[in-house]
Length: 70
Image (cartoon, rainbow, N blue to C red; front, side, top):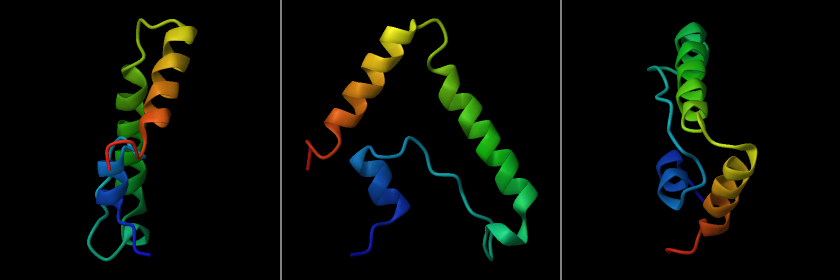
């Protein structure tokens, strides 16, 4: 079974896809690390102003919804 990053995004398993440099991440690790950090910071910012219970509920709903719209 071949599952791509795009498939995982479409299924709602991952929030974003970090582009890989030509030739692979090992060829330009610093760029990939920076992009990863930026994406993590952006992802966490969506929880600004939410209570811990609201964050837990939002994440629970996200993961319960995976695969329901196939």
